[in-house]
Structures are given as C-alpha cells and as structure tokens.
Length: 78
Image (cartoon, rainbow, N blue to C red; front, side, top):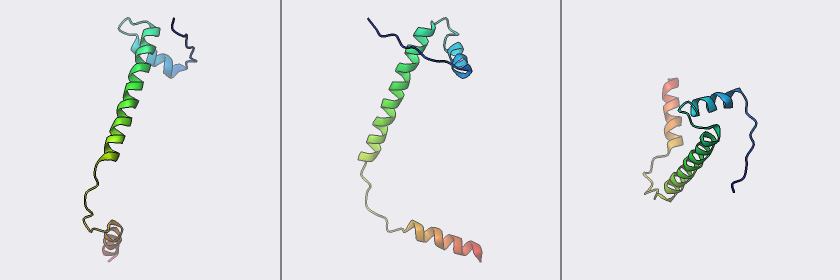
C-alpha cells in the first residue's frame, strides 16, 4: 500500500491544482503526475549538467578575455 502524503496548499497551489484537474483528473492523480514529471525534469537536468562537464574543453585559443574587455573599456573612454 502506498504512503499518504499531506500538503498545505496556498492560493497559488490551489490555482495550479485547478489547472491540473481541469481535464477531470483527481487531485491525487494530478499531484502524483506533477511529482513524477518534476523528478524527471530534475534527472534530465542533472544528466545534461554531467554531460556538459564531461565535454572536452579543447585547446586554449590564446585569447585573454579579461585583457580584451579591459582594452575595449579603454577604447570606449577615448
């Protein structure tokens, strides 16, 4: 048997539940689906972050960004 979860809702949550149950879904089903979708989004975001961190950085191009910005600001002042 599944555990029961209790939430305290506010006006924003009630509005969201109204939107999620507009198709006739029960509040319980809407909340369950929202929790599952939120978890999936977090898992996908974490997987994308890991993939980006594993990407090779490549060779440095020799450009000193800080120096370029500084040079640009000096030119703007003239």
